Image (cartoon, rainbow, N blue to C red; front, side):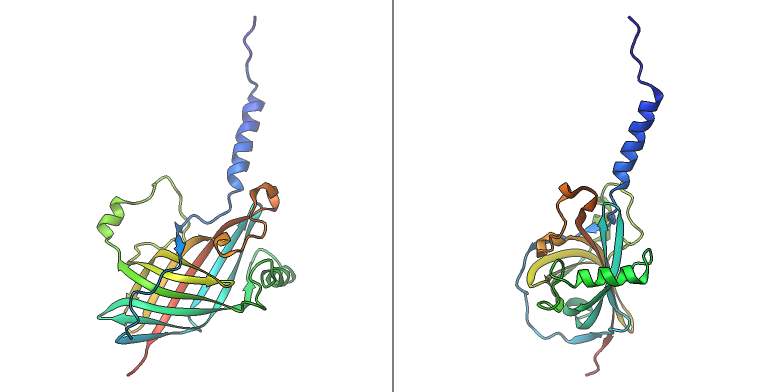
Length: 242
């Protein structure tokens, strides 16, 4: 009996299928925030040095991914401050203007951005009529041991997004409140101080932890919106003169 050979077309179609499946993962490859229950701040002592966030030069961005692509947008910072003690970041808080959050996706037209913005502000997502702001309160900060960090580096086979923060200096932990739900998140950040205090971070969170569950069920197929949301933080803060 002749041997059965799989036709080259079959192998080609299999390869195409595998490629299509992998191509459906449109999430951002970056650091994953550690999410846990809200924690109590260790100290309420007023810091020696207070830096007020420059809201014109600071922003919080988001990127949401679905099976067929991505959308991105921005949360303007309403107000905020960062606290320093003996040259070290020890605390702070920021308030984000969710009521005026918007889509800024360059891949779609203005009308589509407006439609997406309206949907994001609805009860399906942020329900801004009930929850016009979101907040982040720093509860603890620790320096990153760069030597140890390199030894415990993640899988080198993973191709990370260019958005991932390179050479972070600190691990920041804080209570993130969205839509009335508060969770503790920990993520790496790069913090620098010269005449201004700057803090940059980029990480993913699972939006369902905050009750944002719209279309997060993967059984919805190509209508699924991934639970993972990429958050980018870029803060510039000016010292308050005593």
